[in-house]
Image: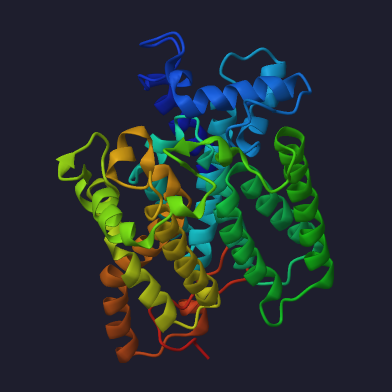
Length: 386
C-alpha cells in the first residue's frame, strides 16, 4: 500500500511540476545541463554505444532510462523514477517498522516522502534517484535479524555497484553500510560476503571499463571534464574543509550565498522536525535494540558524507536553486526516521516509563514485532524485558 502511495504521490508531483517537458517549454527539465547530458548518454546506450566525448556523468542513472527509450518515451526517466520512489517509501517504512512497529514505520515513511524536500528534489531527473534507495536498501539489509544469505549479499553488491556507477563517492558510504551488514558479529556468512564482493566487482569493473573506453584510463572519471577555472571536479583542490562551516549555514539554515538570499529552500527551514534526529539516535542507544550499532555507524557516515559535499566548491547556498540539496538527499530517510523516533520518544516514552513503574509489564506487552517476526523493539526502555 505504501509503495502505491509513493508511486501515486510522485506521479502527481511530476504531472503538476512546471519543469515537466511541454509545460513551460518543450524540453522542460531536459533543458538543464545535467539532465540533457543524462539523456544524451541514455540515447547512446539505447543504441548500444558506450559514451565517449559526452561522458560527463556517471553511467548509473542514464542506464535507468534505457528500457523506456527503447519503447519510444521522450522522457524515459519519470515513470521509472515513480516506481523507484515507491520502492524508497516502502523501504523507509520497513526500516521504521524494525525500530518501533508497523504504525511507526508507515508514519515515518510518509513523513520522509512528504515532509522533507526529498520529493521536490527527486521529481526532477537527478542521479540521486539511484543513490537514495541504495542507501536505504543497504540499511534495511544491515538491520536484518538473521545472517544474510548469498541472495542478500548479491543485493548488497548490486546496491554498491549501482551507487558507484551513479556517483562514485557515495558508493564508499553504501559499501561501508554493506560491510556492517556482512561483518557484524554472529551474522557473518561466507556465501553472502562472496556474493556481495563478486557482484560489486563486476559492476565496478564495468564502470572502469567505460572510463578506459572514453578516456584511455580506468581512473579518469567524467568529472575530469568539469572545469572550474584551472581545476576539475576530479581534483582534490575542489574540496576544502574550510568551506564546511560556511556552506553548512548556507545550505542547512539561511539559504544565502555571500550574504545574498538564493532561490531554493535550505533544509532545516523546509523540514525543521529533522532537528529531532539526535534525540532519536540517543533514544536508540539508550535501548537494547539490535540495530543501534547500524544506526550509529550510518549516522556517522551521513556526517562524513555531508562534510565532503559541503567542502565542494559547488556545495554551498549558491547551488540551492539548481538542486544543491541532492547531495544530502541519500540521508533524508535516515534522518527522518531518527527524527520520528525522537518525537515518538518525547511523546510516548515518558508515559510508558511512568506506567512501567506502577506495574510490571509482560514481554508480550513490550514486544513490538515486525511483520517478519524477527526484531523486538525496546526503544524507550533501558533494559529488554526478561
